[in-house]
Length: 475
Image 1: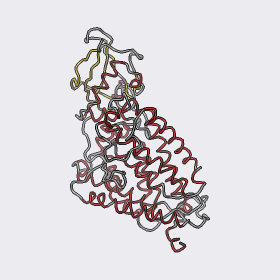
Image 2 (image 1 turned 45 degrees about the vertical axis):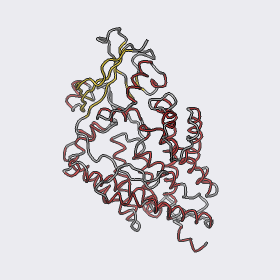
Image 3 (image 1 turned 45 degrees about the horizontal axis):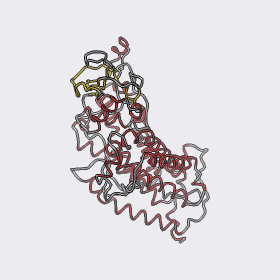
């Protein structure tokens, strides 16, 4: 099939390297996150047990390796295998073989993570989970070092970035007024789910700077995605705009692997010749063997499949009732994306406390969570691309999203359950069960420069009310 050589992209080797290795690295992070957190959150004795979800028919009509049986041991084994496969891809080992080898490796990662998402329930129900699954499926067909990167797959990745960025931009324009009057980022750095160590500094920048941030966001999300499909060097310029804005988000927040993976995916539009013009040391010429006919057929079939599955997602972009982070098929391919259609103006936090006192009137001490604000003196940590799932759910809880998992969390803390305590940054009772536990709500704001100099605090907080009255340990 030499007539199909027009499918080859001989000047996209850097794009392929970043796409394959970057996506594989995020898979390694995601499976490590699952290995460390799933048993306590959704395992056999988790806050939302997967076996109970499966028994209730939660996997009916969904593809999953856990339809027949789930166990924490099986989940951990699959995670360890997939971490090993992902790290091999990061090192470029499967890519050194025939085209089918990296394809098989990525499809294994895709199938296993696709199996985990539904049984993870609310703790695995985030937009970047869908993004990783779709990215893993798509980059599986980029081939190996033997053959030139296929143009249809690079275009499919650009289409993924287009939906991701434009979907997020349209959600904002159609959402809260703060995105239209350019005030959204005067609040967002302070109220985002999981701030980072630079979030306070970003929040305290002048208001004119925040308005410029919003304008830059609109340019990056509503304008730059269109450039990805134009001739070079314009496509590379569009990718650079997206990469730069995602880099700012990496510096000022903790959005798991969303920004990191978007940066990697945006490289699909980067041309080796443009890179060589900027960095003369980069070799823009590569010699490839003829692409096997079977691989060309597979690439074309995948392209047709994804285009067909993309019709609902394309309609969603045009809809006034645009869905955010939604799937239209059970294989989680060609999804709808978007984030922060509205921005929270105030930050409330749920603070969980326990006491060893026999009476619930003294000795209350606060549990510390890894990512969410708690101790006002503690500076937010840098966690991304790791996904601190319990902290994110507690952020939603403070917004009023009451889930059945939270009472179970309080019970586990009363029992001093070791698996649950390992999810925390600080256990005030050193593994011993408290007599009582309660949950209060506080309103947080970043300390001003003057307040920081005077008190040394990162946050200023005041109590709003009681979420859960004191609960006694069962004896």
